[in-house]
Length: 351
Image (cartoon, rainbow, N blue to C red; front, top):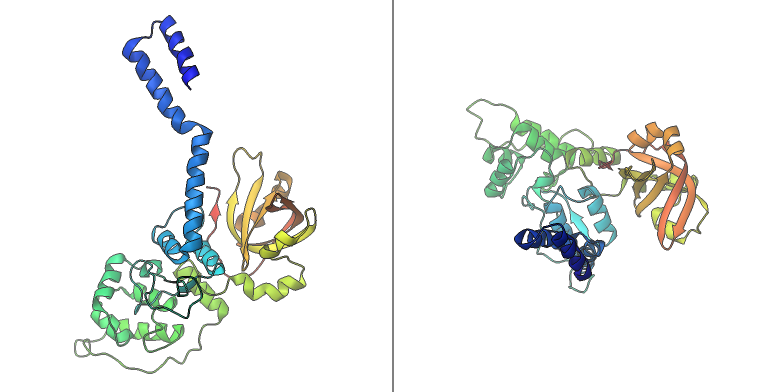
């Protein structure tokens, strides 16, 4: 930069730009150059990447908690962040009207030791992850704790709307009250918010359980993704693994052990769809199964052939050639088909 500055000042002097005007121009260019050079970007990104990796490795629960409490941000949705953290050993606890705060928290009670800190890393999801629940209603709920039943909660937190208490029941956040399942909770929530006359309005009803069967796996998954945008249970692909094995589908975790150039099938929920303007029409997919994230590259002719499935299907099966170059693993797609695997997290598309 010093050599360039000498030449720049000489040229400006020849053209009559001197004194304060010359100094201001040099100052502006130098300030931008110190930030704008690729080296500066690379150094900044390297520091962020290193710090993030260190925190994730040594303070997984706190790192994940901070990420979840500052959404929306970054590239991956909370559903993806949670699944990645679970694969790295974090125990995620559900939204619970008895235990959750508004934000996600780190429970202080310890479990049997499984890490160097003497406790299993844990995280409790906050009430903020009950979709549609207003913060003011959640704060009122926190102030009114503890509760003896759903009826007690409904009586003492009048700020909760009917749709909000139903949402809490849908995602299992009421289950710890009387140790019930979600359909029981929804049944009791409906009863608790049912209009009554003034004679009975202040009385807590202690009815029995509902006559309804508990939700099955797919119903719970659908309720989780609809009501919270995520699930702390198994990834939807885990329930299809036997079928995937029979169809010759390779898990994400096994791709690193697969030789470069081999034909493979991969399948999972679509996490990200990208089509950069500089990529000459190529589409890049990130997909997730219960073992991790995998990437697929879709050339323009393949994109045109399978466009509908690529743009609309929440789960895809991709058949193509594995590319494993210096540890960077992707599948060059030749054939794509939609896959029915139940509800899924929302994908991050073309941003």
